[in-house]
Length: 447
Image (cartoon, rainbow, N blue to C red; front, side, top):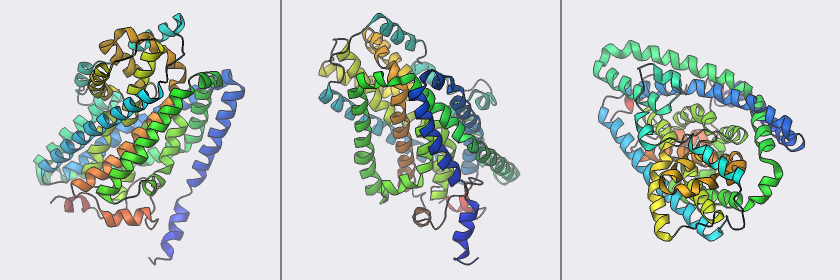
């Protein structure tokens, strides 16, 4: 095929730009309805939840196929362990940095001054404790009840564990496992095709989700809690474009705006649904297309969705300081440091789903400072609105982390990345699969 024919074919194949224009229009209409008819907007919530559930339905099979194919076709098992260890270490460091930034900004802004704690607010705070999950429960929850229950319970880490075991088992089987790998490859193709079909429901999901968020939040709540919201958003921007941007340029010589432009459709989906999980399957596919090897993308992205929650970490510290001041129980510097250490652990129990940060905050306070739990009710009203920034920051952190881990482990094809980011090799929205690589490309990565 001539070079002149390639862009023509790409334009003909990718008609999904119309889909994302429809998402933008749906978001605008949803915001309008949420402001003008808030009660009606709340009733549209099932539309957004239905779309998110459709995406979540596909996450487990996508994780399984991606990791099994990535690990099963690598000759050295030690490389997989190296990727996982490096990723976890990086996640812990960045979560700590995010928590420290949250503490610094929270101490500068003093966002809780002047608010009053009522009985209704206190009850709303106590209600969140019931939804919280302890660290021990979180760790035990990684082990599925049965080998197949990981796929039915929707747990990212349970699926990750089963997929790792299956991948290493296929490595041990050797050549006799080749037919199984081919079978998994066909299943992956089917799963991604189903996902591409589901994506056409995105405008409906975005419309329902944003209308419900705006309808539930209301303008009055936004006005009264503007300081904590604006401060939180600005802190997330500082973290992304200050810390993450610098790391990405120093390590991978990549401009973060270029990377985000490549992931613009995923950011749009997250913004419209308040959940980073809707972009999870597409992030794995896009990172592989960008040039990150299957093992690195398959391990870093799923693990990051449970352990690399930078936006949630910032939220936990700022919200705690906010609650402490609003309840006239400010934290001393020693208590803040103790809180930071505690939240490093507590933040690992939060998933990328809307509302999980609020439950984690309540659970963390219950264990660390029980008298502050009542104050969680102060931010219940705007939590859905703040979850936008949490989800976007978490997603940005995981996309950058995947490129960084790929670079550190020498599992990142820079030439492929340059072609993709320049538009020479556009992402195939029809299949969501990387068709440019030869079938045995993953084997060449094992060195």
